[in-house]
Image (cartoon, rainbow, N blue to C red; front, side, top):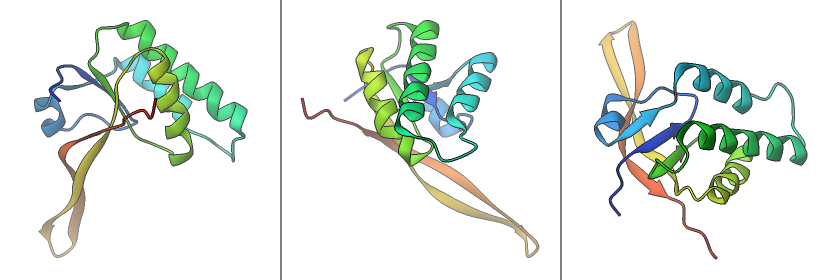
Amino acid sequence: MTFGKILNCTQHIVTPEQRRAGIIDLGRKSKRKLSWLMTFKGEPNYKEVQKRADSIALLIHKEYGNFLDGVMIGGAHFLMSSLEQSLKKYGYEVCYPFGVKMRIEANEFSKTTRFKHQGLVWAKSLD
């Protein structure tokens, strides 16, 4: 499956590897709204999760319409199923990032972890 423009619908910024693979970020204002919609202060109920998923899908549709080949999602596990369904209502193909965490050591006191993008896992409907 070959895709062109894929929108990053996570709270993280696109990595250089993802950018080379055709993944783009939301605009700054929309990214802030997305981050707010994906952050839950307490345990949500089903209605709240569905409302947020629908709001995220609408945000993306208003900004991009049908000019995307796919939407890459990631975040709270309890949100992903509802978000996937909401995005599919607008006709978007949905995928998840696949990669490995790499440990980078500058010295014995400085260690960081970096996500290395390796591909996308496409969600397929059972319809």
